[in-house]
Each structure stands twice: as structure tokens, then as C-alpha cells.
Amino acid sequence: MGLREDFLAKFARLKALQAARQVGRPAPKLSAESLVKGHPKVSVTSDFQGVSYGVRLGTWFGWFWLIFTCVHCFALFYALSQGSLKMNGRLVEQPDWWHFALLALFYAPFFLVGFAFTVARYRVTLSDETVAVGWRILPGLGWSWKLPVGEDVVVTLAFRGSSVNKKPVESVVVASLGEETHFGAFLPDDVKEHLAGLIRDYYGEPSSAGGAEPFLSDDVPGR
Image 1 (cartoon, rainbow, N blue to C red):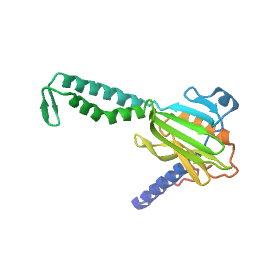
Image 2: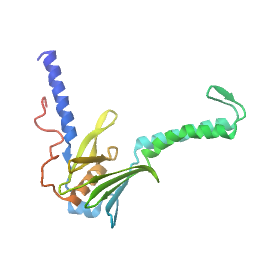
Image 3: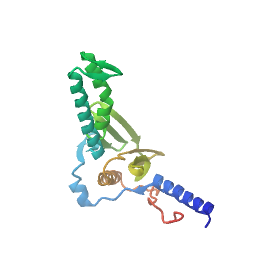
Image 4: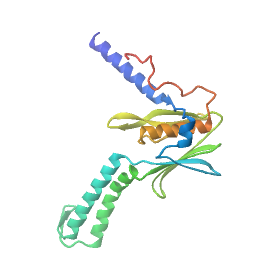
């Protein structure tokens, strides 16, 4: 096989893999024991709105980022308190309160990134009308989105653009009425599979077969 043919074969394989990741794989079907026992990292509450599942992100990357930011921030605040620090190209000998305020403002986005990967929480609320997903970095700070649901709700684990160390990772994808929502790409794999299984169990098996393709099909070229 020539260089051109080899390149075309690899390109076709990459394209097929990308398509397979986009389609994803069906959510696992949880056993009765798993449904009763639950998952240690997933909390469950039930009220008039429906059933809600909560989980904290808590990644190792987030904790490393947060600890490094704390150490770096403390070192600069200490240096500034000693009255000898170069700030914005100027030597600060007698710092005023606004110097500390500016330094705190500079570090705020870095702390938010750390919180987003450590203490941030997902809350997934399932009802007969909608799937509501809330993501909160801190109380009152985050995003929420809703997916109206119909008779058929398809739950898969599929690639939706997120990667870890350049390796694609799956998200929990919920589709209904021609629309979809996805979340939880950076959650641990076992937590993602458990959440996907809970959503599948709540809405039951869809009558259509859409979204039930395997994650890696057997007919991928070059496999």
C-alpha cells in the first residue's frame, strides 16, 4: 500500500471513529440491586418536582490547581504585606488597601477555575415533562438548562467535544423530541454510567432505536 492509500485509510478510520463517538453507546441498564444500593458519590432526593440526583465534580486536576493557587496567592500577599513588591512594573514600598484588593481581584478567576473542578456540583432533576440539569460552582453561581421530554427519551454516553490530555471523553447525552442536552464529561466514568443508567431507568426503554449504535462499530475501516 502506497503512502497516499495509507493516508486515506487512516483518514477514513479517524472519520469513522469520530462519527462513532458522536453517536455514542447506550446507557447501561442498572440491576435492581444497583438501583436500590445507589452510588456512594450520587445523592438522591425526591419531591413534587420529580427525582433529583446530585454529584460533586472533585477532580484531581481541580484540587492540584486550587492548592497551587492558594500557595501562590499566599506568597504574593505575604510579600506585599512586607512592603517590597514589584506590581505592574512598579515597586510598591508602602502598599495601600487597594493594592490588596487588586491582587485579590487578579486571583479570583483562578480560584473560580479551581472551585469549578472541585466543589462544583451537578443536580439532575427528572420529571415527566423535563430533564433539568443544574451546574453550580458556588451557591448562586453557575448554569442551568432544561430538555423537554416526550414519549421516547434516549440516553447515551457519547463524545461532545470534551477531552482530557487530548483524549476524548464521554458525556451523558439525553435526547428527546429532536433535541438533546449533555453534561458530566469530567465526572468519573462509573458515576457517568450510573447517572445515565438512572435516567434510562426513570424514562424506560424508547420505542425507537435511535442513538443505540455501539461506541465503536465492528465495520470501522482499518480496524
